[in-house]
Image (cartoon, rainbow, N blue to C red; front, top):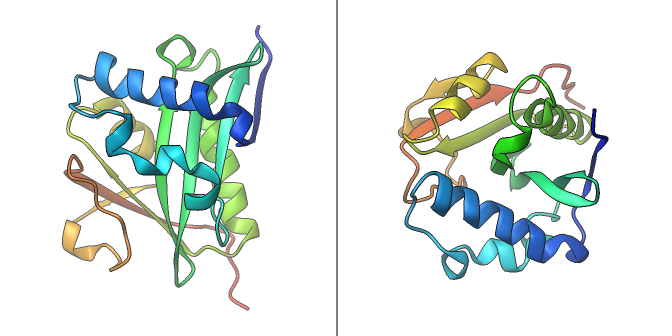
Amino acid sequence: MKQITITPYTDADKAEVQQLIVSIQRDEFGIDIDLPRQPDLNDILGFYQNGVGNFWVAKSEGKAIGTIALLDIGNAQAALRKMFVDRNFRGKEFKVGQRLLDTLIDHARETKIREIFLGTTAKFVGAQRFYEKNNFTEIEKRSLPEKFPVMSVDVKFYQRTVIGHTAE
């Protein structure tokens, strides 16, 4: 089995992360999006690695094969963003998606995030099942926190309470 590592993003990962995400969005799922319409991908350090937020990269043999981000939206709440896994590393054999999500949940717990929200497109049916298996509950758009960044392609929304969070 190939060794897979998950580490916080650095700008050395920028080109590979951008290429991975845009190629999955456009080429695999046919979403009409490009890099200029995702300014967060040009400033991952400034956009995601703020407050208690972070951005992680999964790598195999030094190549980016997956990403996940936690965007701090205040009030002990966060948004799960940019979860993408190369199609060759999806599923039970490698568990890249699960490992990325576990990393994010552990970080949320450690940084006292109470709730995580996410939005997804209708096309990401596999992702929706994955989130539901991982204790995310579908919610109405109107139930999202005011500061949650709704993307134009998002049509389904989920929420998860961070188990093990303890109030101070």
